[in-house]
Length: 340
Image (cartoon, rainbow, N blue to C red; front, side, top):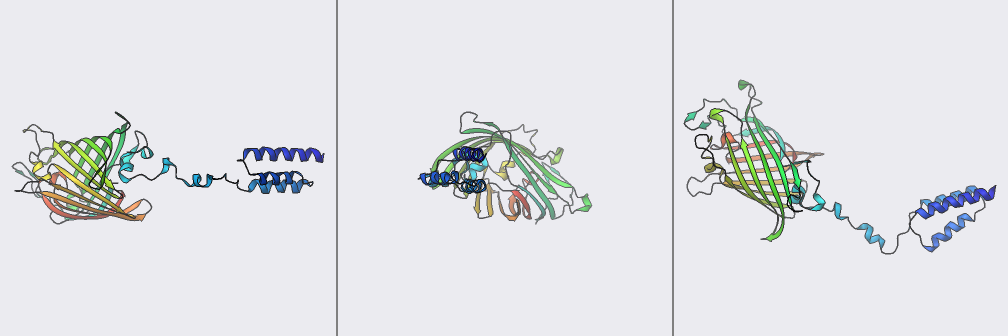
């Protein structure tokens, strides 16, 4: 009976030992020592000790195990945002952040636009307060991955921005303005150097923006654009010239919008530790009647994915209803996602 038990134990140990990676010669001797132990309990304890020991690594394998797989290596901010490299790709029909997503419960304007103009019409005083709330929801999804080749993807995006007079009981805490911006973007991966920056992508886009309001307060326009994305480390620079698609003069809600919002914008972002900074510039590039806007933001960690968010705006066109109206505003709140 003892010989049968000893044989079964030895067979089990042999199966276990065979499933483990190959061991050096001194390990074979240790297993033979266990097999030769006469007492069943001691023999099993011996096998158990050897089975718990980590297998010895073959010569040269230690370095290979320390290498980071290509699938999980760190990708650049622009690559992560637009899934430019294989390591960043996540396939089609997955919602991703587009522009920042934030909520500013406190936004102060030095001069609210109480009498928005539409042609020769003048609205009566809207009774707006200087302190309001603002929030933005923005997302995109890849519609087609590898449209023409491995370096071209088709994206669809949407951004909604609302301005809420939530503390203004005299107008029933109404939303004074909401802007809707659907767009389609064909993104081409690039890789070239320019003035110390790496050109990472070219984005060809078609975008509609409107406030969905009737008659005198209606604002809308359609544009095609080419956006060039550059980066270096944690710094990214996006240059986007655009062309407004002409409209019928009789139906154009804002025929002079390019005189105020210009023909393009520039966005610079920088990450420093947990903080993220962005600067948007817009200008009509006219020597006379020069108009433009600047928007600066700062986000920083609060708790988990929640981030503090500060936004400053100065110039024309904070919203579509204010495209021809200049003001300064400062907002404080929280954000879930940044530009990159």
